[in-house]
Length: 321
Ligand code: OXD
Image (cartoon, rainbow, N blue to C red; front, side):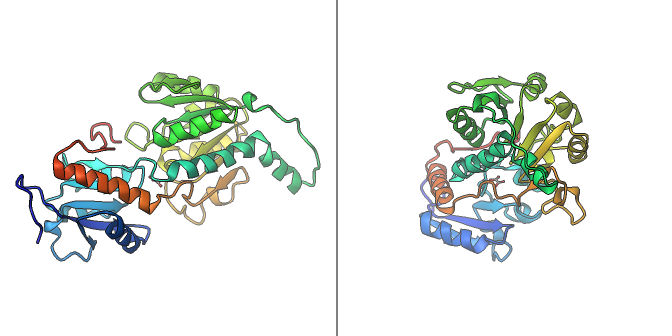
């Protein structure tokens, strides 16, 4: 039985755990090891779903939230919460909490850097040259000559922007609301997006998926980008109008795209992303959540929930992230 504090808050929380990538058991073990006073059960094998206090989830199925009738909080096992916000049975007003960094920033920096260097050092062109039997060195640009637009300045976008700045690239950051980053030019709001894209040789997409960002990377935006620029998307596939991207690549408007995500994962076998010569495709591996770091954040928030203190990394339901 759950004990209760005098305020009626349980002293031991019960967590319903589910991870669509098949790692529910591993998450349960990590939570048991790192989060004090937590009882766990894995969805859907939960004897009394109505007795669960919290959900700890990655891409939960529809129906899970409806069954957890006394939910006090929903924890995402990733930085993104779109997989939770899209649930029709998500109870209104229940706090939704994302992970902040949790070991992802370091990996994200590596991934973006690899993509940036791919274009900055013309590896895409050398690959094509090699296929055509061409041995032809190209001029090397200085790093500050390559302008990189970073769309989305949350924890991960900011870490990426600073890492690129530190290496000497010219970075322009863009976000919904203006953010000030040391030594980095920033801009904000829908009206400035095209101007930022227009000055980016490489556009790095680090945005959350919400109703206002879905399809934001579309033909109109690609048309604003400098001819021969490139896209790196390590956020969500649905941010990009995929047909528009393919058209921009086919026309040569964009030289290439480095994609870690797609609107359907994996893309269907006949999808052009698998074989397009100007696309580098990886299976959503840019940055994996580190279990221990995630559990430490969850433990801290459960302690806050128990003592009635404000939660960390709680998303704003109205804006969707
Ligand atoms: C996340 C992700 O949201 O890996 O953390 O996509």
